[in-house]
Image (tube, rainbow, N blue to C red; front, side):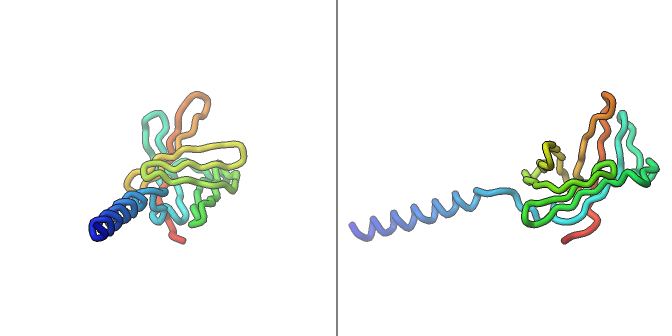
Length: 128
């Protein structure tokens, strides 16, 4: 009887450990670092970011291991927090929230300008 109870408890602990291992957030190691836009899609046309002549309107995102980030949109810098969800990243800064999609090392930020959607595709340039 004691042997059966011991086997049951061991099996219970193993199952519990396996279930808990699946909990928690996504691995952010691929996200940590500095990201810069490489291409931009405007009205369905994709061009190189460097073709936009945005000398004073810098765009960049820096993700840190502690869940903090720095996002620069149109030259305006903000500190914030992020949550990585494997296929998307939620960024909260000030009173704003941004949702970026993430797919195979590409982050996509969509912004609405006068009813037109512009998508900025970011790639990682440095790791932290």
